[in-house]
Image (cartoon, rainbow, N blue to C red):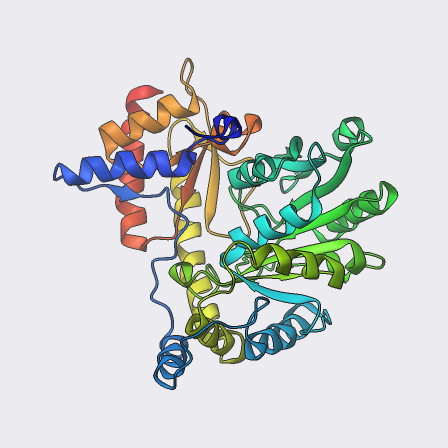
Length: 390
């Protein structure tokens, strides 16, 4: 009864773990959640108040397909201030239902059936699914685990075919927490120009950085703005995951095409949520700094705990997002086997690396988008399990 293509669209590996954890909780067991990339903070009050005020004044109807002008103007100001990029809010920006929909709309607007896109491996699993949903072909591009998980461009050259039309870059990265250096970003951009590729830049974690790491949007480099599509999101930066507000920043022809897809998908994003999003972008950013400070405290604790844990280690110190991609050494056990063992015996939910690509095997993703207390208890439980299996 369903389309044949759905056989190629797996259930999210993250959600599989989440559902297993929920089943244990329903049986009365306390589970530590290291699997979900959802900040545990509340949305800042000034953002919620802006949405409530908008609702009270009657902002409850459709907005233009591309988004409310007030939000698009706020996006333009934000991108100029924090990324040094100038976009015309009338033609080069659009609001989307989170960064996930930004991805879908732009890929639907860009790809013809059979077109290929180089995709990070390991990388966010929905990159693969979304490309397949729109009829394209995702081509796994190996990342260099000891070099900030930057793309292996020598491998990329060998993967090129006449159907290769794009490349995805994600920095700071999910699942690894890797942050590419400015020089590594420049090298990828040079590669994109040499091979006439559109570069899709997933910038969902652009403000979540540590240890002096620098965020560089590929669109800022010479010759790149006209071939870069930015997927933006407010979900992580402002703890607004449930608001479903993201954006596309791209050349006008791409945005125009994506808006036409939106007309046939969602029509427009929730109106009063857009008012809250505008307040997030234009208001004080102290809330972001405070959240990042707490994330960093958790990150440092986890890295120290992992270094003392039998069988675990990190080839690259994560300097962005809120994930640790830890390598494990347990003979005879796959990542899924170990993840299941940690959940069953330790009651800690984390994600095996394989759902993020073939090069994720041998890794576990730990999300520290939960409290420091939960991080401490979770690592105590993991250490207990690892002592038994190593």
